[in-house]
Length: 320
Image (cartoon, rainbow, N blue to C red; front, side, top):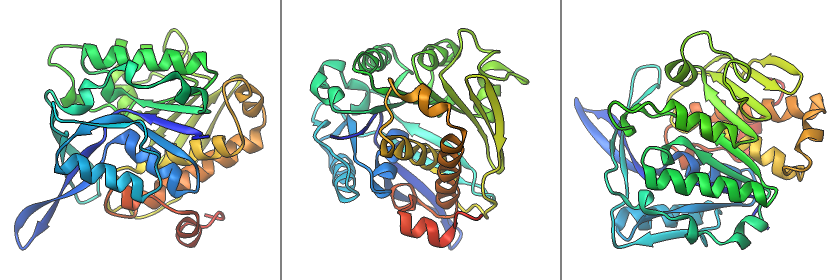
């Protein structure tokens, strides 16, 4: 059984580095849902990636890297009809990112729901989504269709907003589409920056977002405490204090850690409410996820910055 399936974009991050006064861009496989799939596999879980890349050099590099890190690519397609998407990633002195995307008519946007068989969803416990497959009508409907089908198969549905404004059409509000996806998910993750950009300052989920979003909602805020909302309970949790070098994939690493813990404990949609009513399990999973995110922020890259259990324990022990 592939316990965690991740749907969406796999692309090449062109990571900018200043070398001898010149800005050089280093290609590395990435894409938020692909990062989560690799993150789960690196931790020792069973994950698969659902999506499409081009039948080009970059697409082949992505598939090769997914396989290298232990991700099931039986649901990963390559097409000669479009190219693999690219993202130029620049870092400031604090390791925070800015993006420029080359993603018009790319292979990931041409994926159709019919390409994913029901048998794959029947074998999964968790299916993970992001908002970058909500930016255009065709891929948006594919995303919603897969979310509905995952729910019908009793999979836990995870949704990381991962909002990237340059990907959205000018003049179109992404908030309604993102809120629709959030209402279809069991687990929803926002960053504080995303939440305020989409819904305004001072908004607190789930009550301020109607209809209610998710059974578990997590709002990250960089080095500041996480805000966690579950039925009948709201609490905060401080992440480890580390020196960030590159925040690329740090949020994806957090999500991977959380989904790995859930899959490890055999949680699916039918058992999730019982799991949420056990505060010790919920808090331990979130602390583990926070350690994963902190580890990744300490390293450059995406796939190769995601922790294994041994690396995680050595650099960020549980006592931190």
